[in-house]
Length: 123
Image (cartoon, rainbow, N blue to C red; front, top):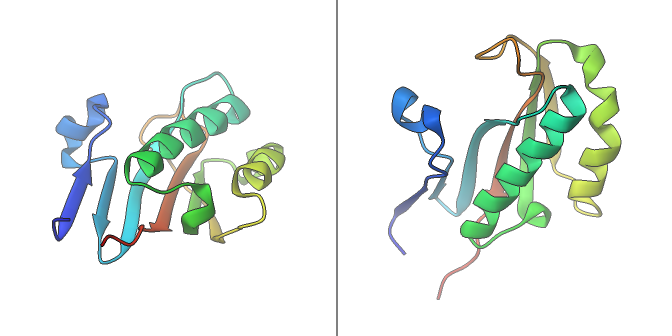
């Protein structure tokens, strides 16, 4: 495997902003902050988790391999409705986590999720 592997999702902002969905480097998979589609925080959270899951799968990993997660929300009060979904996604392998109240790239977005996962060993 190359020293650094980049995974693109083809999202519109990747070229505009100059980033990719995920980077595998130093034994870890770094998944960029991910927003989802939907009308509320719960639907956006579910959508973001699906996008992250695809990036992890492409890198040969899954949610059980996530060691760190950062959540960004413009309104901290909207975080609690997502808890059950997040607990289900990470299951018996919860990562270290941080939630930060902050502005996002567009006011329509209610949550952004960023993860770091352990990359699979290659032989």
